[in-house]
Image (spheres, rainbow, N blue to C red):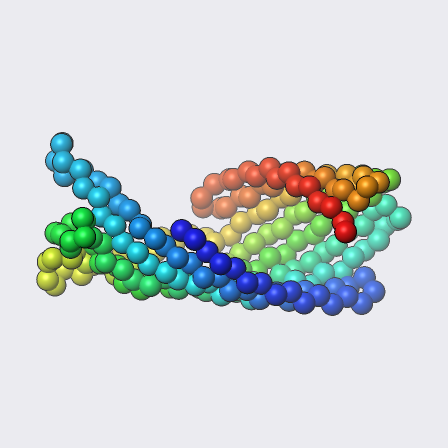
Length: 213
């Protein structure tokens, strides 16, 4: 898959309060989607298909910084993000030919309205900066989408696969360390725990380096 992304950001701040609005568009190109499977104990078949899609995003964040002292501050914040994903339907082929095992998939669409409420902490001492964040996330739009499918060479065989339903709630915990060098180089380490109430917990470690021009 290849993709192209375009994003825009507008930030407003007055005193300790701030608001951010962002919008984005992504174009997706799914080239040679492959599905391999066995027919019996010896025969293997591969079906291929091509598709494309796009993603629209629109989001806003508002927050207010509460200063404890010169080094420590807390920022309660709330966000609301809208996502829409559209993927064109496609037909599979095996060796360039539609077979009895080739699937025909309908257009797919998914929308999401994700709300988040949390607090960020920031502590700075010298060239060291420590950050932490705790957020609760909930998808306000309950999905009732279904995927329409059919076999390529068999008439009147359409069937539907419902999208699995879940609580659509999650908890995000993030901690970071940032070091600023005298030559305008910044090194950062971030650790994130993402706890989905249905699908379990994922953990991410991110190491980044930056330079200020």
